[in-house]
Length: 424
RNA sequence: GGAGAGAUGGCUGAGUGGUUGAAAGCGGCGGUCUUGAAAACCGUUGAGCUCGUAAGGGCUCCGGGGGUUCGAAUCCCUCUCUCUCCGCCA
Image (tube, rainbow, N blue to C red; front, side, top):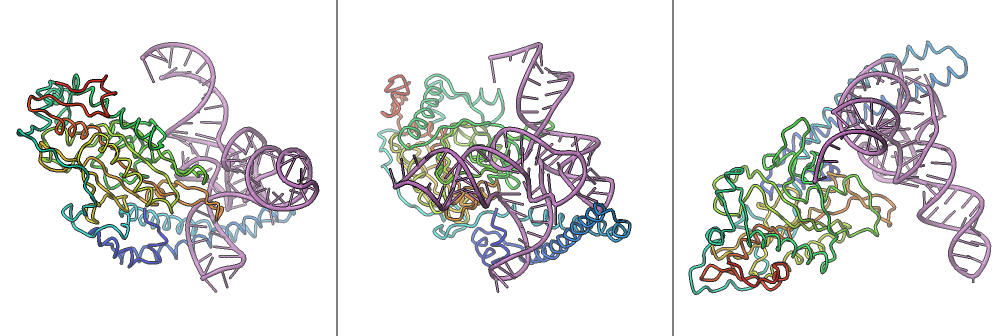
């Protein structure tokens, strides 16, 4: 959520900022709501004050043994008018709240202005796409030949966009996740964490998936409002919800391997072939909780950590800064990592690293005690994939394929593959 | 799934209708003492919102929501969660 004080003090500025994202702020409506809120709140609080003062007087008079009928008569109507203004105030406040909860974060000044992914800014590229002496296959054909990737079976068990992995492909998939976890815990200083895959609405609200992105979630049937996590960013970041942490505890760096579930509503017809876009996939997620002044350095660090996975696996990739039109709801700035896929002859997203600044922290009440002020202040939260495991599997298969259909195992991965240097 | 108990500030834990945002202890912070530290002693120490240039006011909050009342941490309803015992179970 945006800072309500900022919206109050600089509505035009906020509107101009949101314009860059293609959002038109209803300035007139907000101004009207805010005006009502203010007068109603003042009125309500005045009435409450009066009630408190008089009720106290009743108590004192009673204690002194005086007759209280007179005072009680005076206060009689107070409750009624108070109730009316209180209800009105609650209504206006929730209206304001609902509107604000649906506004995305403001983007950082360094974020390129643009309309779509066409306008994302190339930051750097790493590695050279391999020159093949044959026509490289895509992972679907490779997986089928290895008898390790069975989409038909996935459909039978569940529905479209599910897959069954077998044999060395399943093992490779697991190896990738283990490798990533070890890299981040052993070399990058992350604390491993394991969290629920089913979360409540409050957790999803805090990270920004609710209320706007509800369509992308799988909701559980049943009386309680529960959802499958679309990313472990939700439960991991939510561990800080309504918490105040001491300054010495920061930065907190979590790495979490989890399964992720996305309904992919609105993606019909996109990437219908293969493992690129599944309803269920695994991801190793990186989350940073930091002091506000450190968050942009942390974004560079986190992005670097994600890149290191690709570098150790020797997979060519590039880094893009998402433009204002393509960046996610909660993010102030995002770098996407795109890996080269020979089967598609193009770079595809494999990680997205974002600084949400105080956007999520404000929604979930995640704070730290600032020694300089002695007061609890909002932390900054960051998250990024390090990496999407399924897509990394795709990248390894396609980049390490041989003409005979065998797959070489990247050196860094061999210890996780029982020493295998090649499969198939 | 059955039976019972409970939810109070960073923590432990008092408080059953009237200056109680809340005793006490622990912890934290500041000070006295000390070469320094510890101990002891003294003081201080919740959060959110809001009005105000400020100084400084005001409001809300004792798990969530609703109700009774002039007045609720205290009474009533309801939901959620936690704990104990029994059953079941990876």
